[in-house]
Amino acid sequence: MPNSGPGGYEFDPATIAHRITDWEQVLDDIRNDENQLRQAQRHANPPSADKPAVKNAQDMRASIQAAIDQNTAMQRYIRQWIDALHKAERTYVAHDQELIDGGSAADGQGLCSTDVVETTDNGWRK
Image 1 (cartoon, rainbow, N blue to C red):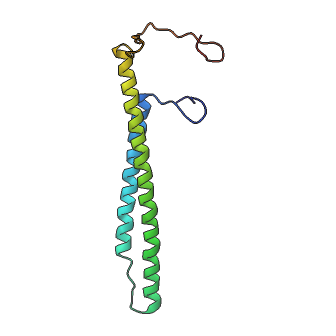
Image 2 (tube, one colour):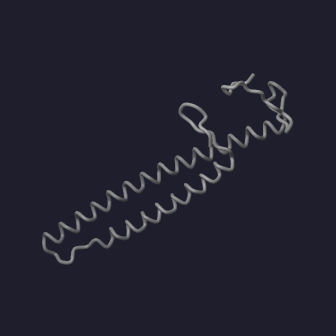
């Protein structure tokens, strides 16, 4: 995954697919954490009806709710990231198919295994 210049990286399709799998596993783990947090919140009950015990249980539920809120925000972010990776994956597939099919309609040129691109020492095309 070489640096493609300021602000970005290039990924090949196999790397993108691998990253999607990795992030989907992270998302599953975070969903499991959410389930555990919700279960803990349901069980955060005071041991007695006295005010300090009730207040402690309320504070604990509020704290767990803050963790649930953070968890769901992370899930939202990860879903957006996975969606972006899927979009990138589709872009590569479409671009690769265009090259296989003979290039764009505008230039009529395709990519074949014998195509060679000459570059200068600084990486620009000749």
